[in-house]
Image (cartoon, rainbow, N blue to C red; front, side, top):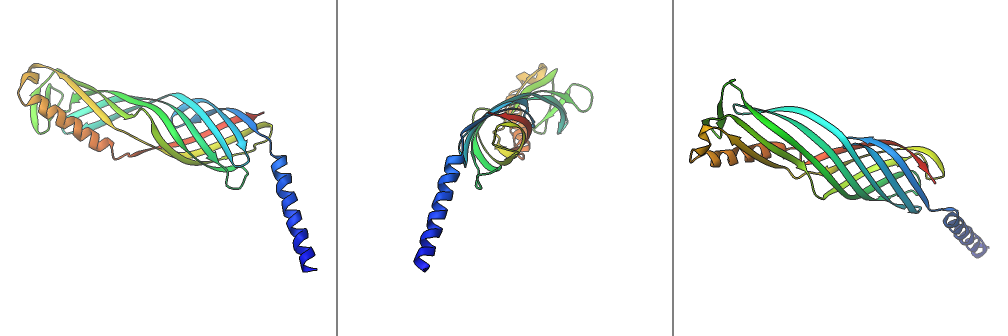
Length: 221
């Protein structure tokens, strides 16, 4: 009797597994999204009940900001756009998933430095110079950066749905400054300008990852 019960349970589990595998259908989902990297579009191919490939692109986000370093006030506009290619893993073969992959960000700010005292005296690395202007570019992230997160989709079956995701992307900060004015010919100027770049980089690198939050609507075919 015990053998018959064991055989019966094994057969039931096997048939349930086969039925589940047969019930799964590959789907393609397209959607529109808004995120901390802008607004854009997404496409996802769920080729297995626990796996899918997702690609998206977002742009159009702009941040204005001020930053003070010594006696220099920097003003900048940060433009953000990013693409992503990710592998999603659904541990319960349902709606919740983990995701990891690569992002392709373009996050750069053009900055202008103004003397805090209101005249043309700029302090760089503890030295004061008479300058007309200080300008430059601050890159928060570019190239290819690793990404990891988790998310949720309302459904993987045909029809309309919603989805959301939170994650983090690594950053790679770079600062490049240039200046014009009478004291740029000073022998110590370029050395102290490079020191100013490194100080700005150290401050920006406190944000070692960039937070990514996504919400969107979708349609699954």
